[in-house]
Amino acid sequence: MALRFAVASDGHYGQPNTSFDDYVNQITQHINLLHRQSPLQGCVINGDIIHDKKEFLIQAKQKLDQLTMPYYVTKGNHDMVSDDYWKEVWGVPVNYEKSFRKNTFLMLTTSTEKGEYLSPDLGWLKSKLNEHKKQKNIFIFIHIPQYKWTVNAIDTPAFFELVKGYPNIRAVFHGHEHDQDGVKMMDGIPYIFDSHFGGNWGTAYRGFRIVEVMKDNTMITYIMNPTEKINESTH
Image (cartoon, rainbow, N blue to C red; front, side, top):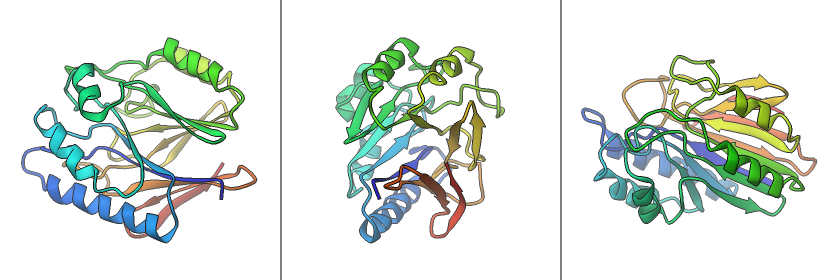
């Protein structure tokens, strides 16, 4: 296997009337268990780590620091902190990259400090896609879907015009839609959802997604719900 990683989103740490401490403890335990069984190169927490209030961010980070593999974060609409404070807590800006040999992750924000929905910074994205055009695979992580597949998405045609010009983009990952755990296709690119691991609505389970890139560059992905494998697909 060339690359194996996890994706989870929507912990909503601090949301009133939810067991948010239990939710984040459970997800870290389940991801760590899979990491012990078959190592993960990393994990992405794809937005809505907290629920609105700035004071929860450091507490949520302390919980996620229990993950035993490197992990990376994106900023969602309920992560209502300034870009500067985000960088202070996480040590990375809201748009940044991480490479694993021939694979590159691009993490982008899709919301303002007030929680307003945004298109990703397409200028920054284009520059990074050009910079990494010789990489075997690029994976993009954004919290809010940019096509109205779902009720809480927005519509950014320019995003799709941009990404379809780069054949090494293997997948785009979303959070935000807690009731979505499938894959939608556009221009040959999989747009992938991972359910939720916190909050008060969504799929009946709280889980996460695993992505495995084989040595022949086939990509296999599936949901852990969080103890059983479901919704497996190959791309």
